[in-house]
Length: 118
Image 1: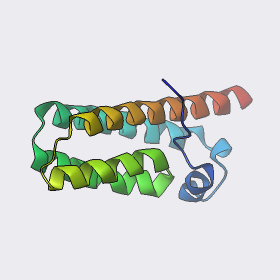
Image 2 (image 1 turned 45 degrees about the horizontal axis):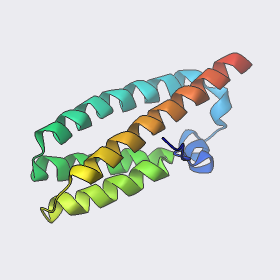
Image 3 (image 1 turned 135 degrees about the horizontal axis):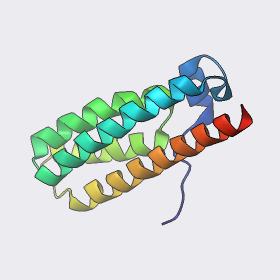
């Protein structure tokens, strides 16, 4: 799987109003929340109900926008629109789940680097 840049570092830094390198506790909390949201999103995807999927994407878009998860934000926008229009969403769900996992991986890597530098 090709690695994409999932986190906009400038936007992420502005989310914390400081350099991301300075507070691994905040990043750990964010990662925990994001992993829980992934599990919830995965359950909604497996159920495949358009209305639930549309609502889940809408909720996640806010989180993605806040801390700069630009690639996932783009996927959530596409999937939300497809669900709203009741189009086929299987491929979009699979791609969204993949990008979501890549975003979690990148957050984990950022946290690992911060801890190593501490």
